[in-house]
Length: 409
Image (cartoon, rainbow, N blue to C red):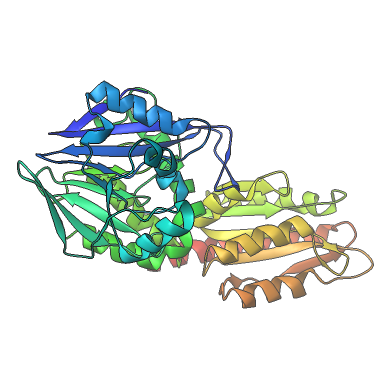
């Protein structure tokens, strides 16, 4: 990777990571970038870093050389967020430079000792504090707790209008030689929007309330560039990623888009037969459908689509007095991530016993999801023509409910 200049006296350093599960659970088939930034005034600050996986810190150190920056030139290490994908490089850095000064929040200071046994000089900052690097580069700090850890903050260079928000405004997706929105085609911008949507739903979603507060703080600043810890740098149209995140945050409680996600599982094809009927009915009404079979679809992708959909169809059989187990896993994750207030419909097959509906009700209550369900339809064994007709009707009713909700919202 090559270092690139973001704006005046400001450079982006980056390492791509692929072939892992992000946070140990989220597939990233298109990879993810770990971004770090250097701001040079009379003094030099590095803002955020990279992980410590598979030699990745060395990628960062090599980019110091490209800039002509010696590691001894760094006066301040600014840590916006302590999660190890941004701070793991400190383990290697402290081996070659033991006396660096850290700028971070009080809560992050405690985590430095816990994660990396680092007790270097720490300058604790809070909202409204500043750090003067000289030559007009004054870094202003704003705490944005729970976006998505309690210790997080954002850093703003008042001279260039560059916001360094770390995980806020980030996205999945590895980056090649074009890390800026003004260098990308519309197709490439659309790619990173899809990556940001899944990143938000998987990582930031349950913290949508704090995220909305953070965005409000952002909008009080004269932001010209958004330089996140993951994804591309927005220097031509920074308002786009800010507006996207505003939408993503609002989707938690809904309404979201005028779309329906169909999630289904079937043991012997009986429930699947009815799935085809409901999908046809919804699409015939002109509404977009995202379809996921479980467990074949990873819940990362399901969560992204449910997050952006105002309606959800759940189709699964009863299995051993409860719902089809992969569906329970997905619903549990949707509850944890706070995908709330959806318009929904549930149907499925049962054999010697029912019970799927009871467990569904328990999950909804446990996470206070407040989904508004149409009357469910369960059928013994294979669906009959009457069952299929009712299910198709419910699909059309769900379309109407979604459209009315989106219109009101």
